[in-house]
Image (cartoon, rainbow, N blue to C red):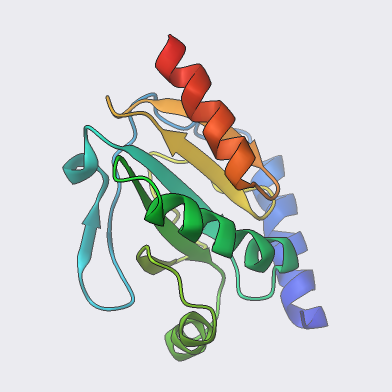
Length: 161
């Protein structure tokens, strides 16, 4: 990670953290983004499935480490979908090159760090992952890297409710 990116992210996190009115993630968030391959990912279209909404960045080592786990989990569960949201201020070409070097089975999209999705809090650290239940509600928020075991436990806990 370059020092400039680290400084920029630290500054962004500090500014976001000091904002007087910081929106909370919606109970039933909406999300519609254009993926790196030009398609649309719409969270509402995934109702009936568990959905992993993962905020990450190309320079984030824990993000890179967890991506294969998320990919394997999604590949092994027909009732689970995922979207990877690159949360960084960089060229789209750089994110696309990263995606080629680190392939996953779920779609990736790049967000504008200055205009994060309205129904989600701006991440205060990366990775940040939301597990959305089949009814569209937020079942679990993970701050920091996640594993297959974390996802399995969260889904099992959500299914028992």
